[in-house]
Amino acid sequence: MEFRKLPGVDQILNHPLLQGLSTSFPREFIVNMVRRQLEEIRQSIASGKECPEVAEIAASVVARAGNFHTGNLKHVVNATGVVLHTNLGRSPLSKEAIEAMQTAAGGYSNLEFDIETGGRGSRQAHIESLLCEVTGAEAGLVVNNNASAVLLALSALVKRKEIIISRGQAVEIGDSFRIPDVMRQSGAKLVEVGTTNCTYARDYENALTGSTGALMRVHSSNFKVVGFTNQVEIGEMVAVARKHNLPVFDDQGSGCLLDTTVYGLTGEPLVQKSVAEGAGLVLFSGDKLIGGPQSGIIVGQKIYVDKLRRHPLARAVRIDKIRLAGLIATLLHYLKGEAAAKIPVWQMISAPVAGFESRLLSWLNAAGDCGTIIPGESMVGGGSLPGGTLPTKLLAINAGGKKSAASVLKISAGLRRRDVPVIGRIQGETLLLDPRTVMPEEDKIVITALKEACRFSS
Image (cartoon, rainbow, N blue to C red; front, side, top):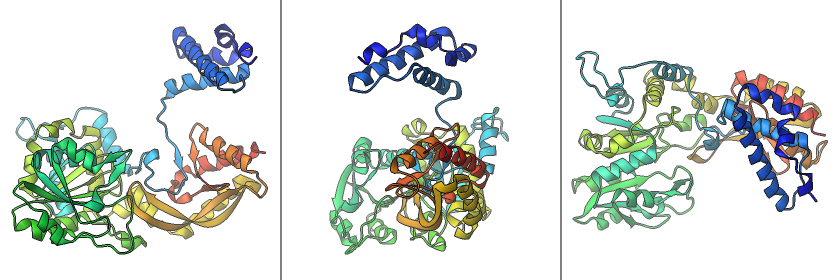
């Protein structure tokens, strides 16, 4: 019965909602969009669902075509309270980083050109001295992400050799990618020592053989092991490795250049500390707690960094000019001592709860009887500071009060489906919106969205 209700292609094409598409797209494209939409509805009906109205189908085709017109990747407002939200693009960039990236994208640059000599230059030359100044390292280079940095280091220095790692650090780093898998891909042989909760310096010492190429620490940046535990610090590992003329690799994952305890968070390993304690290579992300664009940063001793630089894989994983420009601008904030004031990630982490109150009152006024203001917690997220939270205040749109659970879900969906989606988090039967991760200049977007979503939710 439902299949009989399915309109034909021409009926959808002639619907008034589709008439404006002809000015932006060729007819063949529009016809294909209609056919795909109708095919999806056929499959939906076959699974037991009802056929939508013609107007609803036409609206879906317009939305589908609109994604091609504006692009699927769009600006969203992150009201989840997760500062480094991986699904929402991790760290927003500073104004200076954005301007630097626009400059690099808008014309030619001296990316690999030496202006002084008129000959070929290196893209790494633009950032290496800055990396060394900020971290205290002898040398550094940048690739496209930290997984690439780890793969390059292992391929260049430990291929067909053994690399010793604590059993508790053979971790999954996200999206089903695991450290042991990366090691196997590089050609290195993983040797696990210790136990899940306790590893000691003697475990590394006892595992050394003539085939050992390096010792490695992988920071548990996305989980915590608590209770009876013991971890070997970088200094202890270096002491073991030096007796055998071996390097220590420190995969810090998120990477951090500022003391997180100042902001009431647990301590995160500092890049500078690992460098000072003698790690041969320190590897970390540029787009998490560093607060820059996606990149993988490698700093350490020149003898090892130079070998990575010359490896063929270095070209395959090299960073592009636009992200390089943004990362340089981001690192300059650290060099100038202004990171906490200018990098959005650190602005959010350091923001006092008292500063949210007036903003939340405006949000509450827009939500009307939908919401209340409650205390809560923000999270750093993004594979950083597992379990670390920051106190905050939230706009809560509650089920069980004046709104049903279905109404709360409808409000959440209404906020998500706007031209600039507003993304909150659902906890139980409550929608929570956290101002910590919303830029103050985005408040107008939130207020307008709340007025409309709450008005039509009953």
